[in-house]
Image 1 (cartoon, rainbow, N blue to C red):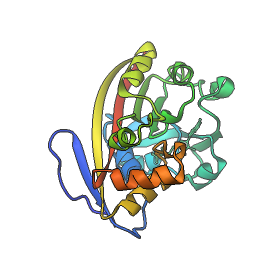
Image 2 (image 1 turned 90 degrees about the vertical axis):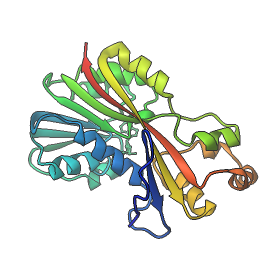
Image 3 (image 1 turned 120 degrees about the vertical axis):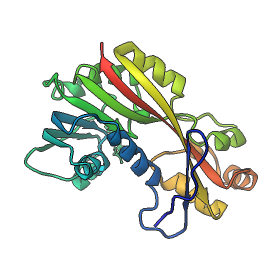
Image 4 (image 1 turned 180 degrees about the vertical axis):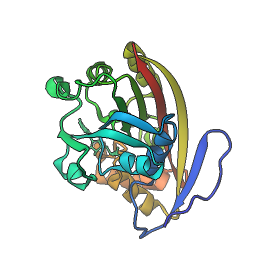
Length: 242
Ligand SMILES: C[S@@+](CC[C@H](N)C(=O)[O-])C[C@H]1O[C@@H](n2cnc3c(N)ncnc32)[C@H](O)[C@@H]1O
């Protein structure tokens, strides 16, 4: 299994990963979901909505911390991901696109709900729309959203623009709909060789925008990349709708 190797100064957390590990491509998302859930204040919630639930990192962390709920609504665009999500009598699965207009009608019935989202909202095609709808779905929200600080040096090296929002853009849109507090957290994932590092980028859910590059450019980038680690940046948000 991958090892946490060094405690970084300031807000950077360091990890090292080695080839052929089992849980290969989602270590940072797993750490982010754990951190997000650790921020919850109560031990019981009536309804929890998990936006972009994936295979269930959030609900598993709730269970690990003995945080209970009457009803859990697991939302994801991907049927395949939802099929991996834990099921149960009080777990409702909802296959919707959070970037689309009509998606939220079935979610917004419960104004008391707690809305969570870990490592997913960076993929909203229309963040303003998504947040305007989410703000109507519950009375408190906790989000963890990857920012354009993710793969920063890689993007600089390749001369490409991050495909995801900057922390400033995120804060601005969130502040249109929520009274929010923000915490920016950096992570570093160290690799034993460049090939492994680039395989990680291609396989992890946090695309680096590298698809904009051709084979030759990619090869050049691998040679020129100056670090033995990848950078990730996540904005943690605790928010109350206006
Ligand atoms: C990186 S995964 C995170 C999954 C999980 N929350 C976790 O922490 O491990 C992002 C998830 O967001 C989902 N997703 C991406 N775009 C979406 C959209 N427009 N609407 C709903 N879900 C979406 C993906 O299918 C994927 O399961």
